[in-house]
Amino acid sequence: MTPSEGGRVGQRGFALLIVLWIFIVLFAVGAEFSGAMRQDVTATMNFAGETQSYYLATAAANRTFYRALIARDEASIDIPLEELEEGEEPLIRVDGQWHREELWGAPVWVRITDESGKIPINLVTQGLLRQILSNLGLDMERSDEITASILDWRDEDDEERVNGAETDYYLDQPRPYAAKNAKLDSLEELMLVKGVSWDLYHGGTEDFPIGLQHIFTVFNPRPVLNVRSSPPAVMQALFGLDDEQLAQIMEIRETGAGSLFGLLEPMLPDPSLADLLSDEPPNMLFVEVQAQVPDSPVAAHVAAVIDLGESNEGVYILRWFDHLPATDLDRGQQADLLYEEAA
Image (cartoon, rainbow, N blue to C red; front, side, top):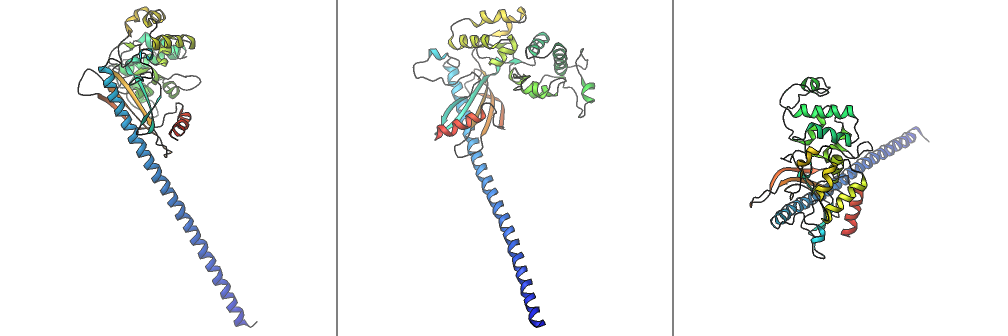
């Protein structure tokens, strides 16, 4: 092979190598573009599914508001199931449990809790607050600390109670802030109070199965507790009930086969708290709705606190909660049921 021929072979080999590198680069660019397109398509489909689920949940919430008004006017908002005709379903169920419904052929889940069945955090007394914290499993020292700190947080002065906390304490924290010295506007403020941990507030842990969020409310305007529709968590925290006692009370309440007052009053930590118990139709409701259209992997969760009152103009929405995280309560089971029942 002559030198000129060898040079031409080398040039052809170099050209082939360049062509291979170009193909590799084009393949990488194409693969990246294809992956980006798939991600865009998935994101678009997820967004579409989430949007459909959101408006389905919003529609179901508004339907629940309307049903609550009808039930109020018909005095059937908390009618015992035993009083219904065979096959008849109540308009709403104020029992703090998730119930499956249908809307436009799609399944939605609705949960309604009576806010007047929770303890008003802005009105609860020192003794009752300490007793509730003890029933949740806190020792006396921590119960006293959190009780005093909550009272310091909501009072109007900067005088610190024994074991309590005022602005001086909170200004020494890594992220300083001042004590509110006013009533709580949101229950989440409790997590700013000295001694209140994330687990204690949210519950659902081995140490704290029941959290403060399940017991207290800022929407109950009176120092009373509606035992007719009080959530089981509140009953356990207030009266220190075991599972057997709680089941007995729930059965009496659902069937109307006994006097709740006669059963509960002896269980009060202080007999002077008898005026705390109330037995009235619920009118301050916390409505939660979770929806997930069958073709969407994304669920939508909305909620509202509504005041039924006595107005003929509709409900008063005291607070609307938009785009909440999907609830963890029976989350996997509910997702399975949604798809199975929609199939």
